[in-house]
Length: 263
Image (cartoon, rainbow, N blue to C red):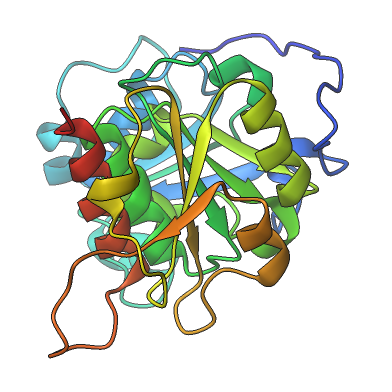
C-alpha cells in the first residue's frame, strides 16, 4: 500500500501553489480520515502512504479485506476515536492517519474523452459540498474536478466522509489561476459551460457531443465575472420558480447526469 514519492515538474500556465495539493493543510502533509467508506477506500489506494490506523474491534471487522502484516493499528474504544476527529463526526470505529495524495496536473486529466467531463469549481469552499461533488463525479464517470487552491477546502476527514471513497478515485486538480485553467481546457478542445441561474439557455440545449467542462460557482455568489467570461456559454438547469436555486452539489449531480445521458 505504501508508494515511494515521485517528483513532477510544474506544468501548465494555471500553475500550482507551493506545497501542491496539500497547501493549506494544518500539519505537514498529514491527513486524518474517518468513517468506513473513506478509510477503506484510502487503505485500498496504492497512492496513499498510510501512517496509523485507530480502530475499534467492530470497525476492523467492518473493513473489506485484511490489512497487510505489520500494519500500524492501535485498538481503541469509540470514545477514544471521538477525540481524534471533528466534533460529533461519525467515525464508525475507524480513524486513519495518512499522507496527502500527490499532486495532479491539468494536462494529466484533460485527455479529451467526450464521455468524461471535467468539473470546475469556482470558490466552492464547503468541504461537505466538494465531497458530495466528488462522489457524483465518481458516479457519473467525470475525469476530474478542478479548484483554485486558495479558495477550496483542504483534503481532510469531513470532505472524505462526504465523498464516500471518491476522494481516492477522482483526480483533484488544484491550480493557482482558475481562469488560466479554463483557457488551457479550451486549448485542449473542451467546451466550457458555466451554470448560472440568470442564463437564458438551458443546459441540455447547449451541450456539445465532444469534451465538456462544467463550471459551477459558490452558492449565493455564483460564478465570478472573470470566470463566467472564460466560459463558452452560460446555461441554467430547468428548475421551477418554486425555489430560487439548488445546492451546488445537487446542481453538479444533475449536470453530470445530463452530460452522461446526452445523445
